[in-house]
Length: 477
Image (cartoon, rainbow, N blue to C red; front, side):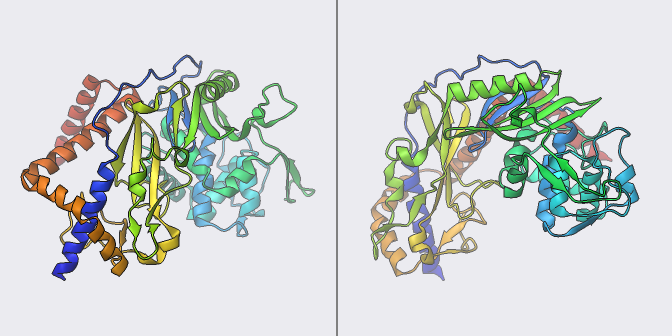
């Protein structure tokens, strides 16, 4: 087993050297980020759907009541657990445990409807008793369902939200942030059922006790209605919300050319549609979405794709065709800095070997996903990290390469690079390098979070001190 461990070490080191060539020695100054837009709502965000890049933000980490845009999360949790043809039965609690006068489909105790029809009632008509019934069907109770909502939100990267019901009706403990809601809205695009429902203009709900002839419903989002003054041809989906505590809330999806944008408005003041239009106009006019496969050799240096299988002369690694970055239209490409990462998120495409994160100034503006070449996929297997490899070299849970003879030859062809790297590392104190690398990553992540949240260094230190103090109190108890 000893030779195998050495071969693994050489392979990982070779790959590390190749990917290190992505790191420029000089970082050029980035142009100012466009900012000539303002909204009247208390909180809001404009996010690029493909990359997660924040194009605009106002109080994006402040907590607000979301109202019915909550139902975008509800729908995801339901689809994670239920099939569309399952039957939902409406209990007395589901029907009557809602605020009087709130949106409903006039369902009654004992009514039955498919999960598919229920989701249309949930998203298009924003029916609150339908939200309750779906929650009970998926988790047994609305309380248990709320736990699943919070687990889902946490998995998506949400840190400032708490959900206690599936509908978004008033509750002081039910809140979210503009940034968290954008993450939830972005994740909803991974569900074809939700996208289809949001784009539906008219839908027929089957008969029920109070509506024996059935009901016809349509979306409440005005920017989807051609006969409404707020109509916008770029908009293809969204979700509305309103309660006495939340005010107007709105999630909007829009697409133009190769760019898809997500706008979130929280605590709007009857200007949620005009605010949204301002954001969409700003995003589409000032930014561009760039497919990284069109920029190999500049944004994506070609040398990281030339590690080949000597039996076929085919590249073993490929750039994911969906990899993109978003930049201001006047941006200088020389200011874009690639950072190699082994981190995984819920949105990382399956099979990713390495992610290259792109920075423009202090902002993350996109990602390049490096994946195995399907033509030689038979040579690749998902395996555990071999004994002896460090976390930095090969984090667990990633695709690692099963060394066939072709791989051995490929590793041998890269031995010269490995020897040079090993020669350099031999004269350095490896522990200090490792510690410095970890510290740099932590610093970068902290600065990125501070920049995106608008938090100053002083506020961050105060928050950290408060959290440490709180932890100390808990331990003393």
